[in-house]
Image (tube, rainbow over all chains, first blue to last red; front, top):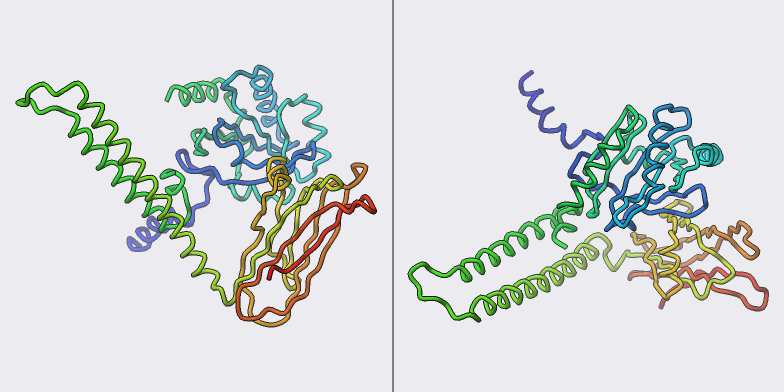
Length: 160
Length: 200
């Protein structure tokens, strides 16, 4: 049993597919936005990026999107790039929700659930803070994302 | 650059990056040791620290160049090992003018099997318009008859959704095969033209 536990402990880091851990590289992806433009994460290298995974049926997701939208409404020189990633698989529904919330940032549609699998999204909303080098610096899942905490982390990153 | 290598999923790149980071650390450490005057020494000339800094800078530049050269050589070696010249097939994509077609995506099938699907961002399309050539796919095929089919999606004339296919049947010989997908404007019909051609 001990041997099995040891083997499990050794194998775990290899087979575990949790959302990207803090300090690891955010996997690159390209998705179509509801406005028809394609967006690639790696093209934002050099900017701080906030990725927010959401679905139309998820209440806390809407709360998070509204909060993030206030951040997008007050852009500054060091304002982060916001990308919402909808997991409904239905671009029309995603566009309708984005419009009803007056989102000022791009809504990308993960129709084939490839990116949600890549990031192993288990709980919604999932918000990830990606720094200028493409490293994940913060992750919030399950409840409405504490946007002031995200802002604090962004300021901390800027000070480095 | 070292951090990019460290983030790479290729183990050899991580090793190279670690070695070079260590070397850079040693060079910087050595330089720091050079710049710190020995307590017993007499006061150094005012220009000594500046010269030492220049020396470190030159060392770092040389190291960076070596890193770039090594990375290039290893990349070439990796390509040669994964895709030997005898079986290699590479597919490139280029755009000539492209006023009648706004590229959105390309799906590539080799022998009826999808091998690549690529979504283009605005920046990538601009790069193609400026003359860039994209290596869309590289793989291996044995000698014999094969078929490549490419589907182009985007916006055509009058901003209409546009989807076209282009096919190339070819006999693969021993040796690398290079294929180009080319999007150009057909001025006579005011329509985009999609070509698949072999490079000799």
